[in-house]
View 1 (cartoon, helix red, strand yellow):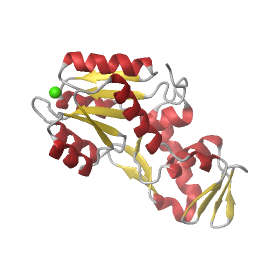
View 2 (cartoon, helix red, strand yellow):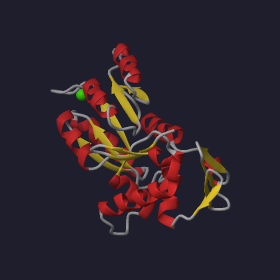
View 3 (cartoon, helix red, strand yellow):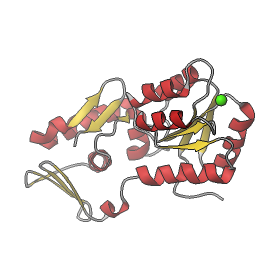
View 4 (cartoon, helix red, strand yellow):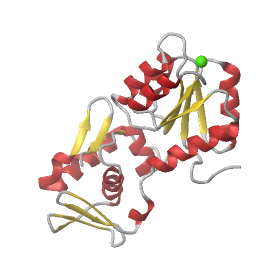
Length: 230
Ligand code: CA
């Protein structure tokens, strides 16, 4: 059954065994995920560079670049949730993977139901806390009052456009997480609107100048996009 909370989330599956990959795809698409499958590590990394997924399922036993190596490369740059798939006997791999920053793991053989439950759980854990939607978020001298739709910098009200406001809220709610320009376009402008990457840079620049003494917190992540430093 489709879950409205995850509908449209992009999931990358990295799995070299085609029958398992297709089984995963079938069950996750049924839940409403947009699924892409890659059967090797190098190809997966290329795909991520072009289009950062919202989450990834990563088989550890892959030809060529193995799953742990892929995970290490991903975690150097990205923070999206990763669920590893391990062989039943490979306990040490699972532990190593968690230390390298994977969010969870699932052992083969797994039931489709277990797979779906794990992936959804990881999403729930990583999602920004819902209660902030009504309250305030403060970092340093910046205070966002979400119910009044107001932003204050060092006690002084700042005049932000709707886009600047949404950008700031997203980044502040996900402190220390790097967002690609593509992802910011999706989350702030919305998927249906055609806007170029340039719009992100322009709005970040304006937002920085409005943040004044706190502008350093809006960091550029080279080759990726932007992040709010906590
Ligand atoms: Ca495999």
